Length: 148
Length: 316
Image (cartoon, chains in turn green, orange):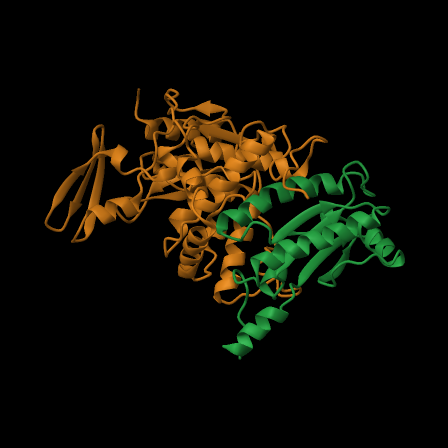
């Protein structure tokens, strides 16, 4: 049991972050350039637009061992493709409710807007999201068991 | 009011005589009791086969995107709402379509009848004005139609077709349902553990036969994500998480499009509660975007459009 406890103590959440190329990814980049500190918990996947994120991506991330997922795009009105984030917003409004409904804990999956200039906001967001997922502990639902 | 079966036959013959359609999709008697089966009529003289009764449960709209030419279709409330969905999604041409509308008072759920017959085989079922008589090898039982309706018919508020060219009989009174989403609200009130336990329990039964998808009128995509092997979007096994993902995404692909016709439930061989997911999305879309599927053919599907002030309380 000791090893399990040790594992638990050293456990850090793994978060898959889908960041849109034009805003949130650039925001993350700026946070790096500005040497802002935030937890090293995210695995970033750059997507052309938050509208590119199919709900299946989120499910697959969870299935393959992510403890949390973050989708972030341009602020409403700022989409490089004009309306990608608006349609994404509708899609995720429905999808996030559905996830919660089937029993995925509130706080596993996050949605946000971060602009290319908001490096500080990005660092804060990752800190917040990491803390929330840390509280929930390792993901157990929807996670595919690996053959041992 | 005359016999609707006769009226459908007359309407069908007339359509062929006037050369308005090449094909009529309707129902004929099934080979088993309690069943009507979809039939495809291409000649006026075959119109004799058409029937209408409480066993015409299939959603005939399912066939529309797959058939070519000018089509006449027998449509009850839910079928007509699926047709609206096809028009919305530009899958069919209104000009090539003649809708024979049928006001509907609910269809009998075969599974309920079978459950109520504890033993013995049902060999015949007859429908009369005050219920159905089910006959077996050595028994006979009279049942009331309202006791045999599936949940989707019980809470249906669109018994009359929303669009039609010919209406058979007279419009029926719409049901007043206090809260069609009552069970969904109840489920939402449970804890995440309970909800997960129910969801994973239901999906555990699934054998991934995809009958729900095949029966679903809106699952008309020529290439379905579940069939694709390159890329393979997700696992095809009956490993539990693969099945769970299948069900979440299946329901989500029907978001804002499902008309609660119950085709998936009837098709499911292992009685997975598919409707509890679809109905939840239906409820949320109504709450968030005041949208109901199958109403106005000119209003775009809710997830293909947006408003600048859409709700975004869920965004950090």
